[in-house]
Image (tube, rainbow, N blue to C red):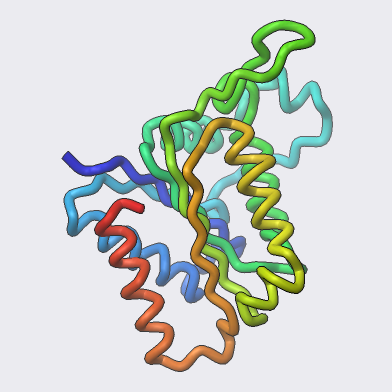
Length: 195
């Protein structure tokens, strides 16, 4: 029996058609061909407000679109999060989505006052796929991949998701057709492996 994979497409353009969308489709195609079950969350297609207060985050009910996304995350064995690097970080819409979806009750719970949080999404792995205009090595070594590390440690790791693997694709605007196809094939292979 295959893995249950939820792909979170974090590109904020609802029109689609970007290389990140092709990467997500390649991963999904590889996964489905190998017998894995796949669900996709297109963040740009969801309607949800920004969270502005602690009360909204902890107490107010989630919008329907967020509850459905939470169900898809809860269902999954493996998450794939794809996004373009914008101003050194994930797009604001993806960050707002994660703030909505990773609420107490789904992602973690307080054990008791003064104690640490209980991680509620253990047993799930993740892959983060980031496209960027700069060389991936520059992002990783010169800039320290700070936003990627924050996502891994402060969001996914905090709620118990691990192991977390990365695929960084740099110089996206200057990519040749051959290199783009090579990256798509890499995502297909990762999808087949469910990794």
